[in-house]
Amino acid sequence: MLDKSTIQQLRDLPIEVVAERLGLRVNRHKSLCPFHDDHHASMTYSTSRNIYRCFACGAHGGTIDLVMRHLRKDFPDACRWLADTTNIIVEEYNPKTQNSKFDNSTSAQPTIQNSKLKIQNSFDASRYARHFEHPWLSDEARRFLFDERRLDPRVVRWCRLTSWTDRQGTHWLQTPYFDTTGKLIGIQNRNLDYQKPAKVECHPTTAHHSHPYGGGVGEEATPRFRFPYGARCSIYNLPIVAMLRPEEPLYITEGCSDCWAMLSSGHKAVAIPSATLLSKADKNLLCNLSDRLSTSFHMYPDRDAPGEQLFLQLKEVLPTLEHHQLPPTCKDFSDYYVLSEK
Picture (cartoon, rainbow, N blue to C red):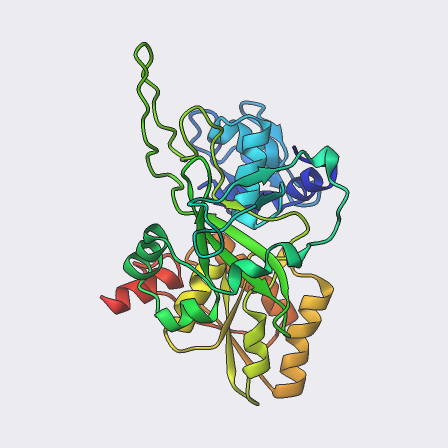
């Protein structure tokens, strides 16, 4: 299912960032080794070769190897886990139907295509644009957006968020990515049932247990995120750029959820999944805002090492980027926003 270029992207992710995403505390290119009873930080990281090695137990490898061994996953699942945390596209899927608003079906029918059959290299927006003409939110989507995240309904409408349910009964939130002119350039599908118990089916002779990641009984673990093949999901909420006034602040967040929270709190904001995924064109766009409008940039980095590293990487592109500190009890701006709304 994975092509060579996607696998290489995953292998090129910074090894120390991957280690920290796994919960390892990296300090001066070292951490405790999770593969034996370690008390002296035997695990070392080479940022030039992008590998890890433990000089006590001999464990070694790259980013995918580290995820496979630490989370006890096979190669495909380890790749999916890495992709989920970085918004790297690993496969195409296409919901043929949306909901009763668009046709007579009650659930969408996803099509997952074998990568060997893919001949299209660009995102075909015409296949998906109609899904966002009349956004529709399921009960699960409304609970997630309004009860859990406490978002302003005006923000949800502005972002054109919609939802659908696949044939396995998994509920998805569909987030469109538009360019500065409002043209659809990508889609992120978020699994609303991720890490929630799936329904249990019982046969006369066999009891099937639910999978912790949803996706239905007997199905593969359904990933947290999916992207249509060719989708460009780097900077999110680009249409807000056209609304910026001279010297007006723009907040940069990590991921769509934080962006929705920032918009709901009354600030203009964009989101990026990772500074390593920013294209040269994206960097030029942000720099142009600084030069043309004297835009001031602000960021509340996530309270973890990857969040701070993201800020430092963006700081190299935007020297005026201002750092704002989250309270100790909040891991990201979404937490901070929800806390302030209670």
